[in-house]
Length: 155
Ligand SMILES: [Fe+2]
Image 1 (cartoon, helix red, strand yellow):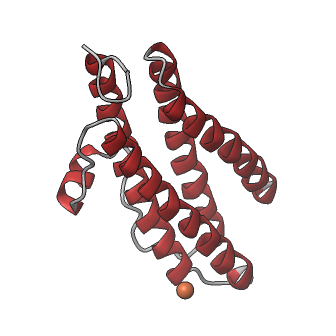
Image 2 (spheres, protein in one colour; image 1 turned 90 degrees about the vertical axis):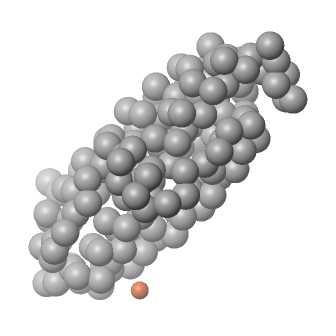
């Protein structure tokens, strides 16, 4: 059985479930970044305050892209905090004000995201879902570069 955009329905549903996990992870990540942006203290305040804002501005764009991809695949995106908390792998970061600790947490969160993105890339390839493949390829390449820069910062 094919859906409206010509993809296998069963494979697409599996893909949508994984995309909802990614959506939940991005929502947790977004809120973690907000906390770091607000609570960071110390000599790197100005640099990190701005950097975390850049990251959450990017995360919020991805949240919308992922949700709308899920809808394009004829499934429903999760949209409540309770569902995000139940579904996400990324954990809430609370009360972090130390710059290095915040950057380390961001690196860990990005590593969680990129692992799931690679999994979705493989599933999308198998389902011949080029739209999701291209979305994941862009996210992966961008995150890899960001991880290199964050790791350089931590040296
Ligand atoms: Fe702000």
